[in-house]
Picture 1: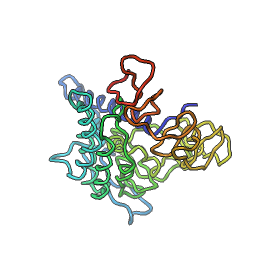
Picture 2: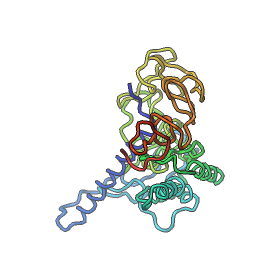
Picture 3: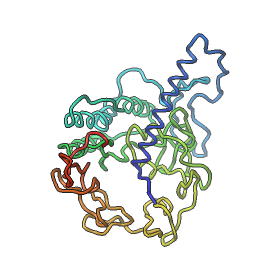
Picture 4: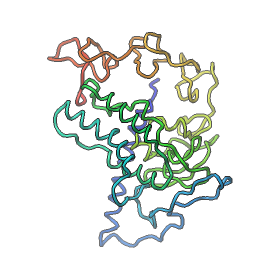
Length: 337
């Protein structure tokens, strides 16, 4: 059974977030028209303020925003002035830098990227003291991105992978029971229940049962925090079929990696707690440790540009066939075939 990766889920959620932004823009345009009709009464819970908490002394209160009435607007409102310099530096590395490097390899302009939206939303969260960033960690992320984008053999139709140094560096400062806009704003172990691209939520502990996987985390998407669910889980167990379910214990029967819970894998229809194998070892359920790929049942480091290949999985980006020949070499692929 195919298993969705965090990167696949993030790409789908980014697409959903962009679609909701377009719907919001259309709704605003319609309401501003002279023929838009009557406006509904404002909602009494439109602003983002602190909710009652059993641990109010340790919770940080998020400031109120300007989401009022029935206005459909992004959960991170438009901010005045320049973005925070540290957040702008991180977002430039995550979005603008790979766009420029790809353009240099493939020709043409850098095209659209989410760098400005990333800087806007992250700056708002930082200035509201809902998240914190370390200058040292941002520097390590920027350096790792620059190294990962050297040459052109990383170029593919997909977004450039995020190095491990860039994961988990947006840390939440809000306690349980506090209104939030993203799970990244909540302290580790909490998630922003009810939040979406146009809706705020409340920081809560993972639930034992109930719906899950129904919303898009706008801030996690634009800051490319693909592993945010590890520190901000929706469920005490795992999310299966849009509902929280108990994890299958090691040795129990499974159909997908998610069935086994965080840190475990489904191998030969049984949950396993074995660590992911490095290059040179046999693959574990088709998976390998970061930096290695599963090729013909064994983990291997991605082959260098120009190396012979038979399939994309052997290379950093793609196995290309110059001149239509049968054999291939590892290299870049600027667009989908």
